[in-house]
Each structure stands twice: as C-alpha cells, then as structure tokens.
Amino acid sequence: MIKISMIGTGYVGLVSGACLADFGNNVFCIDIDRKRIDALTKGEIPIYEPGIEHVVERNVRSGRLHFMTDLEEAVTKSDVVFIAVGTPPRPDGSTDLTQAFNAAEQLASCLNGYKVIVQKSTVPVGTTRKMAERIREKAGSGAQFDIVSNPEFLREGSAIEDFLRPNRVVIGVESERAEAVMKKIYRPLYLLETPVVITTLETAELIKYASNAFLATKISFINEIAAICDLVGARVDDVAKGMGLDQRIGAKFLHAGLGYGGSCLPKDVTSLIHVAASNKYDPKIIRAAHEVNRSMVGRAVEKVRAEIDPVAGKRIGVLGLSFKPNTDDIREAPAIALIETLLAMNAKVKVFDPVAMDNFRQLGHTVEYCTNAYDAAEDCHALMLLTEWNEFRELDFERLKRLMAEPVLIDCRNVYKPNIVEEHGFRYRSFGRGSA
Ligand SMILES: NC(=O)c1ccc[n+]([C@@H]2O[C@H](COP(=O)([O-])OP(=O)(O)OC[C@H]3O[C@@H](n4cnc5c(N)ncnc54)[C@H](O)[C@@H]3O)[C@@H](O)[C@H]2O)c1
Image 1 (cartoon, rainbow, N blue to C red):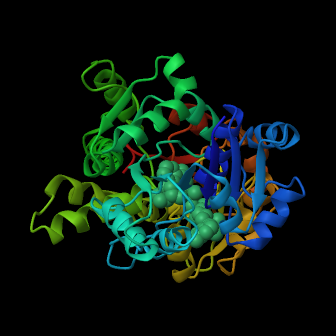
Image 2 (tube, helix red, strand yellow):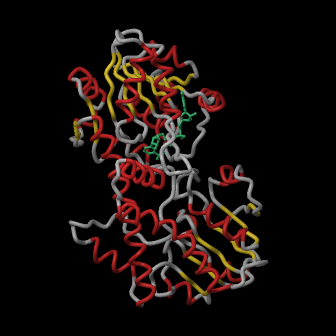
Image 3 (cartoon, rainbow, N blue to C red):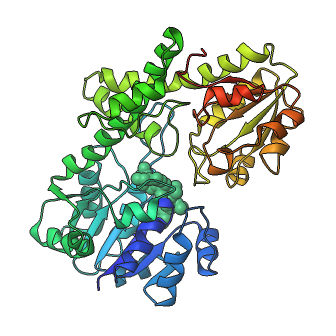
C-alpha cells in the first residue's frame, strides 16, 4: 500500500485518485476548490462521469480515499505526489501553466523526506523538468525527490474503464528508485499485461501531445473527405468503413461530423503548434488539422442556411451541448461556437442536453432551456443534432414533424440514415452523404 497525494480533483484527478485507491493505495485527493471538496466529503460527485460514484463510494467506505483542501497535511503523509491540475489554453494557443507551477511551489514547502512527484497534467515539453527545478529552488538543494512524467490518456465518458484498462502507460523517469515506485503503483496493470513505455521526461510529455494531435488529424482528415463526398456525391460512411478495414489505418476516429472539441484535443493541438513555432518549426499537418476543425461550425451553419435562409427570427432547436456524449464537460464544445453564431444571426435558439445544461447556463447565453428533445423541437424551423447522446439516436420523427414549424433536421453527427429520415418527410442534411 502506497500513500499517494493527488493534487487537483477534477476529471483526471478524481478518476485517477479513486482508481489508485481501488488498487489498494491510500489516496488523499486535494483541491483548492473548497466547494468541490465539501461536496465530495458529503458523498456528492461534482462531475458527470459514468460509474465514478461507485468507485468513490467503495474506497471512501474502505478508508482508502480521502478528500481535503489541506495540501500540507496530505503531502507530508504521502510517499508519492501526483499533480493533476488544469492546464488551460491561453488566447495565443500556448498553455497556461499557472496551476501547475503553483502546485509545484506549494508542495515544495511540504517535503519531509524522499517523495516521488508525478506530473500527470498535460504540459508542454520541458515543463516537468522546469517544475523540478522550481521545486528544488523553493525546497532547497537538500530536498529529496524525483520527478516523473506520467501523462494521462483517459477519455471523459469512459474514464474509469480507460484508467483501469489503458492501452498503455507512459512513464518518463530518470531515476531507478522512482521507476521502481511507479512500477509498484501500476503493478495491477502489469498483471493485465498493459504495455508500459518507460522513457525520458521530454519524450513522455511529447507522446501525449503527439497522440492527441494524431487523433485530431484523423478527425479533420475524414471531415475533409466528407466535404469532398458532399461535392462529388460519395458516401463518407462507406469511405470510412472501406478505409478503416485497412489495419494500417484503423476504423477509430474516422467518424465525420462537426469536428472535435473538449478540454483536450483543441488545446493540446494549439499548444503543440505553439511549441513547434517557438522552436522555429512550422507543423503544417497539425496546423491544417486545427484549421479544418475550426471551419466545421461554419459548415454546419451553411447547412442550416441552405434549408431555412434567412435564419434571422427563426427558431432553431439544438440537441446536445457537451462536446461528446456521457459527459457534462462543455469546454470548447462545438455547440458553444455554433449557438453563438446562430444568436449573432438573430436566430432564436432552444437547447436540450441530458446533463450539460447547468454548465452551459453559466455562459449566460440567451437561449431557451428545454426539458427534452421534443420540447426543444417544438415550433422550430430546424433541429440540429450536435451531440450523439443515446437518447437522440431513436427520435420519433412523426412526433417531431407534428411539433416543428418546418421538418428540417441537420444531423451534425451522422447518426441517422438519410433515406429513413427523408421517408418521414424531413429535409435532412448531414456531413459527407451527398448534401452539401
Ligand atoms: N479531462 C480529460 O479528459 C483529460 C484527459 C487526459 C489528460 N487531461 C489533462 O489532465 C489535466 C487535468 O485535467 P482536468 O480535466 O481534470 O482539469 P479540471 O480543470 O477538471 O481539474 C483541475 C482541478 O485542479 C484544481 N487545482 C488547481 N490548482 C490546484 C492546487 N494548487 N491545489 C489543488 N488543486 C488545484 C482545480 O481546482 C480543479 O478542480 C490537464 O492538464 C488536462 O489536459 C485531461
């Protein structure tokens, strides 16, 4: 049993902390957000993540998982300190490292004997080493610690499964002592024969960015193919299937639609572009992936305009606000830019999302919040499906047609088969299925 502090109890910190407790460790989850810790202490989960409540509840009950705001108390009791704080984007695309360096400085003043400090946040290449230097400056040259880069690859919506059964674990480490501790922590995954990549700090940091940039490129690539499909009358679903069956390509992340969003891909792509540019390299492919993605909201708006121009004064229903299903996270969700564009065009916007409406409300947009998909569709001139939540996959089209002012569906996630929707009398547009 290892005593572990987890600094930052957001999506990554809470899931990692709870799962590390599940491996049998004693874990102290710390956050500066007192409301978040108060909620967790009362057994309330502050994020929507399927299954997390059971892992938290079981480990709190067994006495292995603790929530606190007192970083010093947690760190002094721990052998290993994970940092899982936010690394949000700055307006110029670079990464705001304030939270990461603050966490490093705070823990530096609490070092009471040897610790392994594990950097789990996604940080630009070179940051982990700089954090170690900052800790040494603050804690003094006699401070005993090793630093490790251990980027996280979990996906919101399936985070528990991803943490417990990852495709790989990446550990950037330069001391045998710290490597042994990390292997001990991940021993349950070694038993599942999870591949573990042991490498340098910088390489570990870059593996994370390269992976996300590659996934983003795959999405933008298929979206570009979808645009060509629309123009030449080909079907992107079949193109993706035909491509994906080639094992060198693989079927995943070849789903055409509105593009990627969320708290990782957009910011990690711009951060990598920024890192490359500041090293005087122009990363052309990654920049193109980013630009294609940025054009997707405009393409969706063109599809609405093709059906109900002018949109000014018309009511448009939006199904789904989170950047993907099974999460309440709306950070960089395409829904935000799309709704802002529709509002700027003087459309009236009605929205529904099963779990993300409270987060969206905080943005303060003038939209009508609805209680379900049909409520959102009522009196609308067009309905836009932005997030492929399961409950939007089997809509009752006859009911929708009766409720809507005009039967128009813009399916931004290619959920439906065009002919089936059209048989119900809908005007239907999606991405890359022959309806530019
Ligand atoms: N969300 C994901 O799906 C995901 C997946 C892989 C990697 N990541 C990366 O992991 C990191 C964390 O992401 P997240 O989505 O969990 O962020 P988040 O914003 O949900 O959570 C970060 C938490 O850290 C807390 N915090 C900040 N400074 C602190 C301090 N000094 N002491 C204690 N707590 C502090 C904040 O209050 C917040 O609750 C980011 O670098 C992100 O890029 C995220």
